[in-house]
Length: 89
Image 1: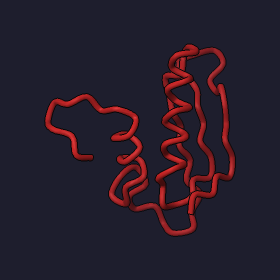
Image 2: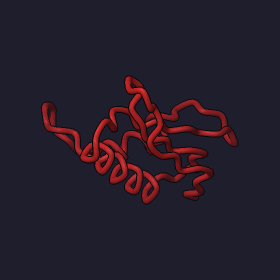
Image 3: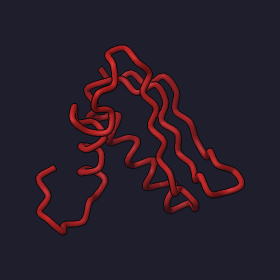
Image 4: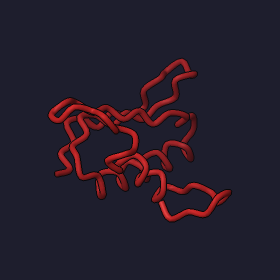
């Protein structure tokens, strides 16, 4: 990610971790569906940051992501937004 130890992880660095071949989907078989759940989008500000992360992931991910789900697992309404069948390659 290019960050130093103790440095704050921002949207760009997090998206690199998600999209890197050794990152979030490491070991996922070729051709499988990949689902990304962005949790803790509990208010408008959090949802906006989740959308920023979504757009950054879509911009740099070399592999397709089947669904990007933005939500808050601990809330009454868990899913706030779903982006389906995203083709990034």
